[in-house]
Image (tube, rainbow, N blue to C red; front, side, top):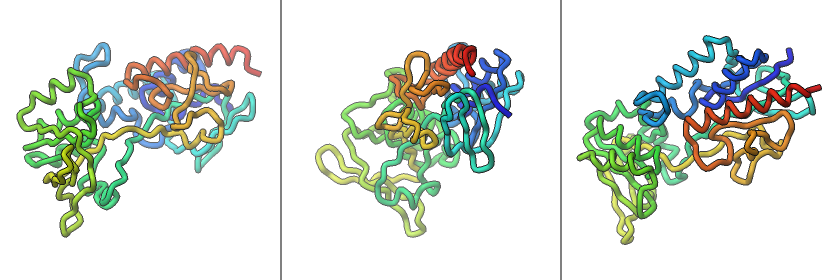
Length: 305
């Protein structure tokens, strides 16, 4: 079977691309390794996606998935391990099968970056989490630390403040970098403490190898251990591009380079969403990218041979 379009990833960019491709009567499928929705599934609340005043990331992801299913977009649960360019035909390789397509759209997004400090691996899933909406309810009435002062860290810290007794936000810069609205919401919480210019040295485990606290170095050089029942890390993202690393479409940081048509430097291979080298990574920009990619793929398919 030869597909017109195969979309790698089923986040906002991928699902939007799927909808546009299906509406153009193309033979299209999305390939998703985990849960459709991408990073928005892990977002407690979204207030800046036009048309929705407030909803959870999980709700928005579910709405998007229901839309794709309602018009018959095929969803394949599998992991893409390689993409092979054979000119007009592209091969998308998984551990279970090799699919052939005329067009590939990469929408694989990003995964959270880790700190790489002592006891991080030991305490992963035993006190350290990268998803407040997933694991936050476990810490009701307890004390948690959020590492990172960008939008994700600040927004999730504000959410955790509604559940826990205390939230300590650690930022290694002299200021938070989240947008001002998110900062205002966080700073309005009575149970939030923010430590700026602080560096995480290690995570502290108790005698049972469970989370006990976070050791940091303060701006003045003092060492402090913050008591913590749980820690949530938001220190950046890593693009998921291993499957295309041999194609020469990524920059030195691993993000896919595209032009304003979402075209890579290989004909028939497009990329959309957070996996792209870009200024802003938001749901609205991801969906826009997905739509643009398909519109230009349609023009390419008109001359495909």
